[in-house]
Length: 283
Image (cartoon, rainbow, N blue to C red; front, side):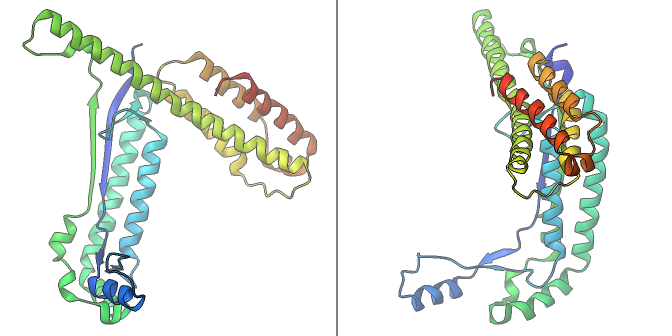
């Protein structure tokens, strides 16, 4: 199966009003008091000081971007990322749900916008300037959640009026570009696997050396979740990546976090298995 039929390009663009503004008066005052030039520093004030809803939206947006990046692979500088078709329906449904939640949070924030402005008046004190605040309709336009899906074109999709030799060159350049991008994209799952193995073996090694270690459930669940995700992200069908994934999956099979906490033999066996995976591949 070719990558053009097993993957789709997806873009998630989320915009959030920053709600900060340069205060030149305060910036100049601080510079003057420090006997510094006025380009030595700047002070940006939080227009929503004393409120939490705008920040909650920004935090939620950051979480959505992270969720998007975990399920996709890098593809182009413009922001489009490669997503396996095996994840498409699940991704599309959850992304739509996340977009609805985002819009509800924004609508709630806008509904109370005037109250937030008044609250910030108290917290900003003499730095409060009413003209700093845009109208609520303008503020609403500064928030957005946009999803775009597009197919990965085949080299033969070039539709240009050009001599056959030039068209052949364009197709060859495109095919070479796709090959390079696939290699770059496939480095991401390898990197995630390497980071997971390195973190886990490091923690196990520190415990074996007598250093006190706190064992959370995520020590097991993060590894098993990565194994599941790698089955989708291996869009190029790399047999070595699949072999390494299966080895981690076997190492985690039947492992309970309580055994890791309490049984030195379990930890030693796991450290050996994970260490072996690290040694067997070129990272």
